[in-house]
Image 1 (cartoon, rainbow, N blue to C red):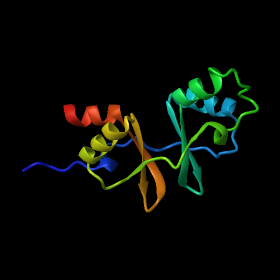
Image 2: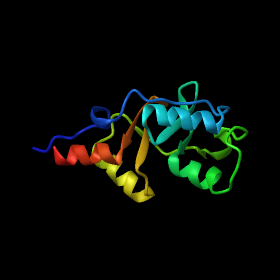
Image 3: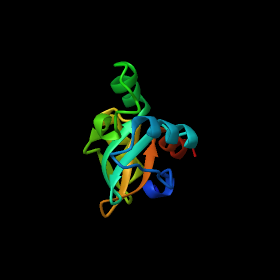
Length: 127
C-alpha cells in the first residue's frame, strides 16, 4: 500500500509574510536575514501576492529602480497559486511542474500556513 504524503508534513514553516506596503529594500533585508528566496505577501493572513529573488532581479535590479521607493506591491505576482495543506505531495509536484514553479504557498481555509519548495519535494521523494 502506498502512503499518501500530505503537504503539511513536509512544507517549510513557519512562513514569513510581508505587507504589500513594505519597501523592496526592506523585503530584501528580510529575505537575506532569514535565508529565504520567496516572500508571500499577505493581508490578514490571506495570500494576495508573492515576491521571489527572481522578481527582484527582473523587476527592480535589471531596470535600475530605486529599491527604497518601490513597494512589494509594485513588483509582486498578484493572486498567487496556492495549494491546500491536505493535498498530496504528488499534487504539489504536478502543480509546480505545470506552472514551472519552484515554490507553492500552502493554505488552510484560505489562510497562509507554509510554503512547499522543490527542495521539500526532493527530500520527500528521496526518503
